Image (cartoon, rainbow, N blue to C red; front, side):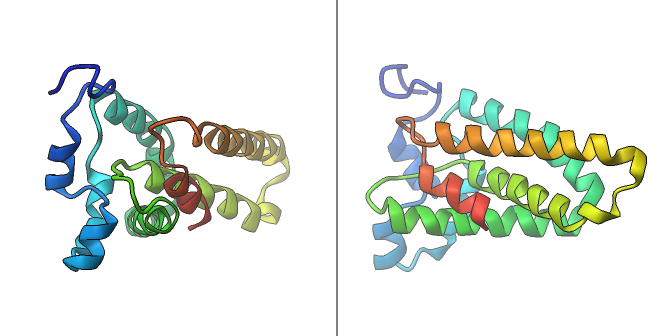
Length: 164
C-alpha cells in the first residue's frame, strides 16, 4: 500500500498495477500484450474501489446470474469487460486503467436490453414491478454516465461496457 496522497482508494502504486496487467495501450500495441484487455477487470486500484464494485456485483450480478444462468452471465461479463477495455484504449490511450466497472456496466446494459426484449412476456400482475425495474435501471444508467466523468474514473470503459 502507498500513502493516501499517492492512492486515495487505499491500494498499491500504479507501477504495481501496470506490472500486474493494467490496461496499457503502448504495451498492448508494441509488445502484443493482448491479455491486457482481460486482466484489468480482475484488478482494482484499492480496497475502496474493490468494495464499490463488489457491492454492485453482489446486488445486481447475483440476481442476473440467477435469471440468465452461469454461462450467459459469464459471457456477458467477460465480453463487456474486454469491450470496455477496448473502448478505453481508443478513447483514453495514455492512461492506465483497472477495474471491473466496465463488466458491471455491461451487465446493467444487458439487463435493460433483456427487460425491453421480454417486455410483452410480463404477466399482468408483474407489470408494476417491471415498470419499477426499468425506472431503476434507467436511473442507474443515468448515474453511471454522470459519475463516469469524475477524476480518476474511466468514462470510456463505463460507456463501452454499457454499449457492449
